[in-house]
Amino acid sequence: MRLHIANGRLVTPAGILDSDLLCTDGIISAILDRGAEVEADERYDAAGKLVFPGFIDPHVHSRDPGMSHKEDFDHSTHGALVGGVTTVLEMPNAIPPVDSVEVFEERRRQHEQSAWTDFGLWGLALGDANIDQIGPMFDAGAVAVKLFWGYALHRETRSLVYNIGDEKPENLLMPPPNGQVLQLFAEVAARGGVLAAHCEDKDVLASSQEALGHPIETYADLLAARPAVAEATTISIAAQFAKETGCRFHVVHLASEQGLDAVRSAKRNGISVSAETCPQYLTLTDAEYPRVGPVMKVYPPVREQKDQDALWEGVNEGLISSLGSDHAPHTVEEKARGFETQPAGAVGCETFGPVLLDAMFRGRTTPERLAEVVATDTAKFYGLYPRKGVIRPGSDADLVVVDPELRRTVRNEELVAKQPVSPWNGFALHGGPVATVLRGEIVVRDGEIVGERRGRFVRADHTAAAGDRVSA
Ligand code: DOR
Ligand code: ZN
Image (cartoon, rainbow, N blue to C red):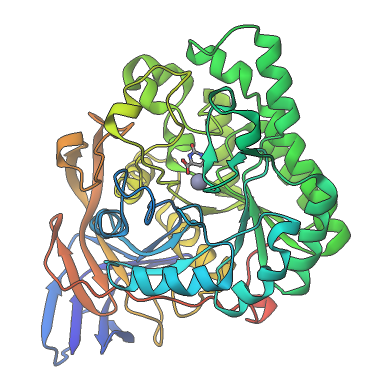
């Protein structure tokens, strides 16, 4: 099967190429001069369009199994594909969580039945409770392991507790103490893997909530109860642990200027700390709250304009090396509740590409940097490169075709998500994906799936040459 993408502008981190592209049997086989004569089974005219490497969303909670009334892998990967994502990295906190190699293999088999995109899997790190599973999960191809540092878990289901006051203390499993976390860093380092964490210090959160003196009622209360210093504190501790052990440490969903400063100072000291941020932190602020409403509640919270501006600077200067949606659905009913009782998390993998492209067309970043951060560097970091994340002969032909002229308003009722409630509902977006190519086949055209469901598991390889990695 040969697919010829003609007349497009190919976006690479090094520059934009006015070239054609030939994909053969799922692989990019040649970058051709414009107008080259080629024999192909199918030709796609991409005149006036940008052709990006397929986006990788490394931060998706599909709630499947265990909470599939909130979302499932069929819906999350379908939505992601429509938005230009060709590879999803699935977070480990479904029920049961991926905290052993047995569950890892079971989850892989299960998701192979329903994946619309290619996918990789995260493992869950609990501290001493499953430290013996870290190596086996990396051997099975885990992209990274995740520590919910600062989150209490339900003792039985290991699911996240969003509002600690709602649970009986005997049902809570608190985050492992720092001594255990240090051992975890050492173990991940010994396995050559990546450790990522939710960074909000539980003690800073507890005393900030106490200092507030009343339940969270307003958006300002939420910010006061979860201050940026909670994020920066955990990152600073992690930097010391990474320095001590040589572990590659990644901050997921970085949300504050103060947290970014902690990443910057670690990097300046040659420590392997890297960071991801998300479209919600790059496009929303507290000032948007009256328009967006409580559905904006995510952890860590969306902060101020100065944080958003700092995060864009971090993206553009390379301090932030990956972007993820943190697709974390809850029911429409749950998201309609008040602040205090509603769970944190927002639907986001189908708006991930469109919202970031809109920001790019508004001048927040360049196409080259977007391609790098949303595909190439993410693939390198998670051990998927050069198979994924790059437009180059020999790589998987995963592409997203973007029309700069497209105008689309996000509407809850048009979302694929099982619980269609988006913080971007009503936002008018500039430019956007008009086709998605997964391994050489056009699978989405104009927002509609036109291909077969053919997502595959991708195994991370963390033994790749250090030069092909992005970390510090
Ligand atoms: O808002 C959030 N929701 N933040 C997280 O870290 C987890 C997520 C979830 O799984 O609901
Ligand atoms: Zn998350």
